[in-house]
Structures are given as C-alpha cells and as structure tokens.
Length: 184
Figure 1 (cartoon, rainbow, N blue to C red):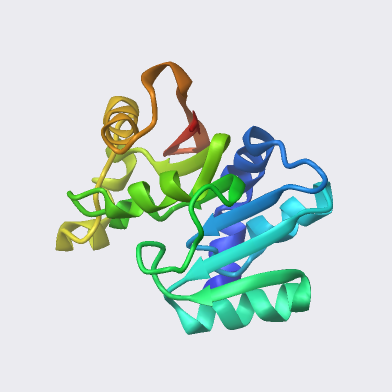
Figure 2: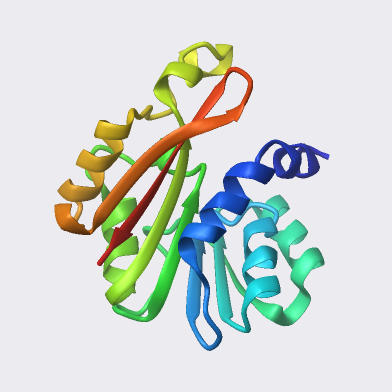
C-alpha cells in the first residue's frame, strides 16, 4: 500500500527524471534506491536496457520483482555496500534517496565510481523549503537540500562543476522539487 502511495506522489518527479536520464537501447542503468521499481519500469518502456535496482528494503524489492520479474537485476543492500563493478553503468538514478547520504558522501562516491566516464547521473529531492514543513523531518534523519546545496554535494563527491545542471520546479501546489543531471 505504501509503495502505491509513493508511486502516485512521485509520478511527476519520476517522469521528469527519466526525461533527463534519456535512456538509450543497450545501456546499463542503475537505480540506487529503486523502491517499487516504478522508475525502472519507465526506463524499460522507453528503451531496451539492462537495469539494476538496489534497495535496502526487502518489501520494496519484492514490489519491484513483482512489477518487473526477471527484467531487472535486484540487490538487497545499500548502494555503498553493493557489489558494483567500477565504470560499469552508462547512467544512474537516485530518486528520493539522497536524504540519506551521509556527510562522508559514501553513497554518491559509490554511484560516481559505478558510472563510466561520460555516464549520466540524475537525482531528485524535494526542496528543503518544502520538507522543513513536514513533521516527520523534525526527527533529523533526512539531509535537506536547496539547489546550491545539491550542486555542492555533487561537486564534493566527484562530479565536475561544468557537468552539473540543477533546477527546481513545482511538483504540486505547495511542493517544490529539485532535479540534478551530472555527467561523470
């Protein structure tokens, strides 16, 4: 049930992220924090790719497996601990997961390492100004971002400034999102 609610709430951010990713036939694409597999399903609708989903939640991976069957390689772990060969992916997604990126940047470093030179990384987060109004955020478990903060964390963890494009836009009334495209 929670997965269906998440898919509905994230429909516009996921669609825009896949537009930025521009999946192409034959590419190897990683979804770091794949959740229910909705983004991977959209990637596969657009191009014939090899897709890998990583998620720590076995419940979310079960939803992805149910949705995609054998079309996806699935890993039940964190992106930092996943066995990903260096320079093995053409593109990677991180949608609604950078909130959990530690100060050491291990999550982003792992994604950067897994991308081939010229590989594309697309991230989505809800804007700090929106999230600060949500009660569950007060527990302090989420890293919040403005456009500049997202750009800075990408630069700090290996992405060159000239290869980063960050923009924000309304997702719904009262919710602003931030999308980033970074080239390795």
